[in-house]
Each structure stands twice: as structure tokens, then as C-alpha cells.
Image 1 (cartoon, rainbow, N blue to C red):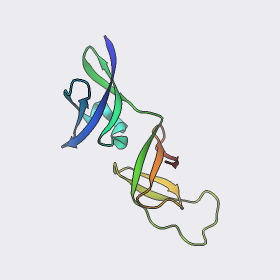
Image 2 (tube, one colour):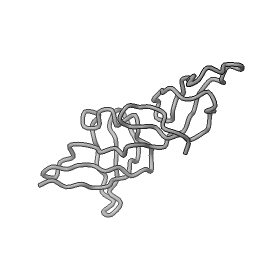
Image 3 (cartoon, rainbow, N blue to C red):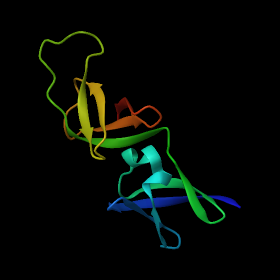
Amino acid sequence: MTERKNLEFSYEDRGVYSFMDLETYDSIELDPDILEDAVNFLVPNTEYEILFVDGNPVQLVLPSTVELKVIESPEGIRGDTASNVQKPALLETKLTIQVPLFIKEGEVIKVNTSDKSYSGRS
């Protein structure tokens, strides 16, 4: 039997990712091999859809974009007016992506989950 449930990501501890079922308050632990690249987009206290087959979690289904906070990004270089110039930004999930020069630390941005690209401001 195939079932989809929305579970809230709680925390990661030593490579095990804990989720909570908000209806039953059951805690479910997922290994990184099930989550794959989705670990780059997991934010605590956020709900994610998880696919279960015969009661076992098999896949986390990401939305097309997620909102993540920029925790580190160098200042843009003054006078750099070439179009589409980008700089690296470290996000709250430890993922680093390229963002436009005007993005600053502390901003929340949208990130495309299919290719890990900047998708706009929140």
C-alpha cells in the first residue's frame, strides 16, 4: 500500500533525521540514503511530504522551491555592472549556491530544489 504523509522536520542528530507526524505526534527517523539531496533543503519546523510503501518511508518529496535564509555572503564588488554577475551564498542548511550581488546576509530567498539555483527573494 502506498501512502503520502506530511511530516514536520524536527532535527538532525549524527546523520539521522527526525520527523514528527503532527496528527499522532509519532516520531519517525529517516536515514540520509532515503533523503538523498533533500537534506540540503530541510529546515526545522517545516512540513514535508513523505512517501510510504507498506508502512515504510521510501522518499521525501520536495516542493519545487523552498525558502532558506542566507547566513553568509560576501559583499558585492562596487562598480561590477556586468549583467547576471553572481556571488556565493551559504544558506542555513549549509548549502552554498550562487546568488545575485544584491543579496545580503540575513535575507530569506527562494531556492529551486531541482537544480539548487536562486529563484528569487521571499
